[in-house]
Image 1 (cartoon, one colour):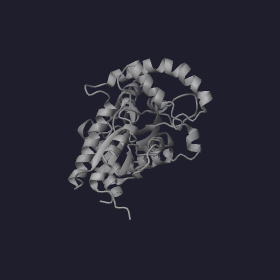
Image 2 (cartoon, rainbow, N blue to C red; image 1 turned 90 degrees about the vertical axis):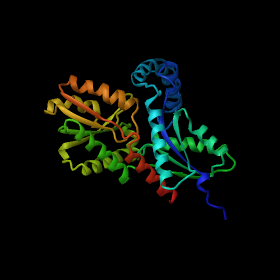
Image 3 (cartoon, rainbow, N blue to C red; image 1 turned 180 degrees about the horizontal axis):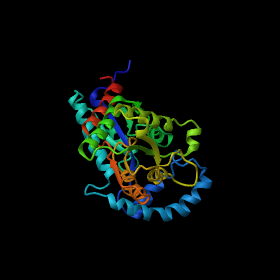
Image 4 (cartoon, rainbow, N blue to C red; image 1 turned 45 degrees about the horizontal axis):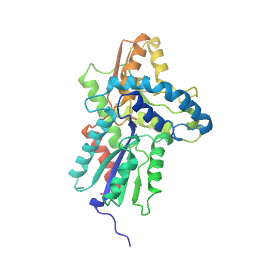
Length: 332
């Protein structure tokens, strides 16, 4: 009978979306080329998509996106990478405090660096025999969690001896995660000017076709928001779910965040708070699109106060929730 791997032979891989290596057009072009070439992300036949991607998008979008990245780039580089690194260290600390000394924990990016393949090869070289992969996406989507599984499987295809693999598809109803989001919102309200009349839960958008094909993402987003609102004891009129970052001409799941923000002042709601529970850490989408660009949309429509509530990042309760999820999977 094969022996169960020891703690020293076990590793955890936390995986996030990814980021360019620098806020430059060339770095963004490489990143977008990898991201938008993923068939899980763009479900259009390659003969139709490739001319659009290489003939139009990768010629135009990198320069514009690089300017957006430059507005949020910090001393430690990409916020998504630095904040994911901090979260990884916090989770590892929680696991070590629980007695899991010697357990390896690494972070990886689905697109860009450090890549999933590079991290897996590194763990293989160090003799790891069991790997737990946790995508940092609370809600499951084929374009996110399944894409990470594809990348892991692509790497494993080249290996003769496969390790034990545990893959955590989602944690959208995990109590620790929901408690952490609710606590972060409550603390934000307590430390500032109280709460706005309306709280928007904004999740990354997804083409409507994905939902029709059976992707559970939409329902999982609604379920997470409902549980968080319940923990905050909010009435139904106190909160709404919206979806951001629509891309291309296709119909995406609704309501759209920007359309809602434009309409709210006309409904008499001129103060709004917005949180993005689908993001483990802050990134370009939350720091630039949500916190800056969408704020301008709301104010130009007649709104008066718009506040973005930061992602959980490396909060102690967030790290504790993820560590608890991993401990249950590890059976310790």
